Image (cartoon, rainbow, N blue to C red):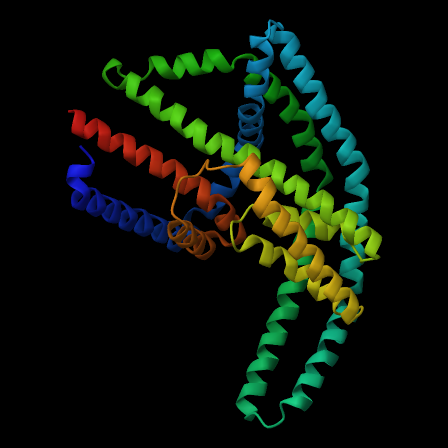
Length: 355
């Protein structure tokens, strides 16, 4: 039926995209009016959101263990202890080193900026033939870069040193995850009961499709990011690179962003390497390129696969829109949101044609 109405389907996709864009645009423009309320609600629901995501990612493992005749309570307890026990040990080992490297980077920032300025002055000498207006623009770019770097490092330090907020999260989240895993089937049943019987079967099918594409994508992507962080850290550590853990975490996190992520993550590493030596910069570029080559050609196809069946042009558009609306966070959530909307719109259209 869809093949017979391709122009109509395309028109509906375009109209839906326009409405989504306008909605997001209004959200951005009206943000100052509801910022305080949004911040309060976000802080209140953050433990629930994080716990729900963790439970959603862990539940398939519990389900598989339960299918092998392992009692559900025992399955949950094993996964719970392994995940949170391993996570707690990792935080215990990694967090102090990460915090030390962030503080050290913040202390070394004036020195790094002075090195960049000396490099820029060399560029000035080699580009003296350019008009004075060009040099003025370069000065403005440098000033903005210094301000942005200082603001970013300040925010990172402020974020990772909020001990009380971190303690609350680490205390509440494990409890919430346990109950979410324990009562996952009950909550699913309650939601199903609220769906009208006429749409229940199609809605269940839609949820399965979302889980199949989005769930597999997120789980695979987290494993890929872990691989990138671990391999990059090992390489940077043995190369004698400064702040290897911090840079490896940045590379792993930005790898969540398709296409642009590896480039964004490589910028801080290259910026620090160039202040040490050109040779180290070349090594860093080789490591980043090699890791991304292995990840994109071997790791991602095997772990992530074809979970997100969306054209690359649509993904790039979603990334640009997400970056414009929400910066790095917007780019991270752009592909999952687009995948979710794609599945929902397709099933809504199926329901409309069925009626």
